[in-house]
Image (cartoon, rainbow, N blue to C red):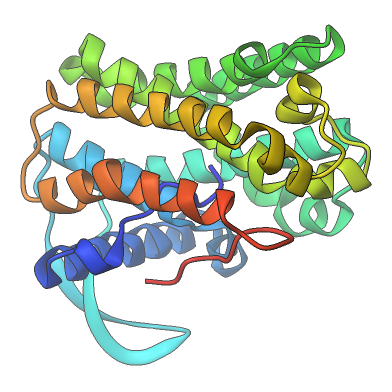
Length: 286
């Protein structure tokens, strides 16, 4: 995923902030154990959210330990690495490979990223073949949809459907229609918010963009001027669906940060993307 599923820090309790950061650091340490130091560059807030969500959903016990980081020599609380966390780290690498593949299909060679991560991605795919198969299916469907000139829903469907299946895979026996719907809508949200954020860049590089295909505005400024209400409605409708699905999902100790992310964080990112002055919206650091 791409770093758009983030908590809203001003509305986080301190205990939830510390716990989320401990989850993030835990995934980063899991990435190191799985694929070495360089793979840690792919860690993002989306994958930390997934780790927090599924450890709670599956009621898996975790231990908080004090560890140092290569970027921060001071010890801080870290969720100790679990087998589930290691597989989520592999998912992150597989999704990074999917992003690189999509960029290549759009004419961006991404040579440096392929050089840096190809070995780690191959290793992750070999160890988690079911997740790799879901990513491959998504890539094939995405290429087909874009060639056929799809609009918003059609363009978002392959990634949304893949995330639905990913959520079912990680939930295992705890999978429910609500959990799968949550995965589907989060996948749709990520795909569309990324397309909005990349609107001008995609235009300059002549890459497919679902919003450009649907509305035809020459740049993001024009898109906002002519379609701001439509954009807000499209994204808000997804978030309301997320909230509805989440009401039927039982959480544990991570409930605070998961609820904050789904109820406030998603809307906060939409606001940041829609109200940016120019270029891409600023990255969040917690």
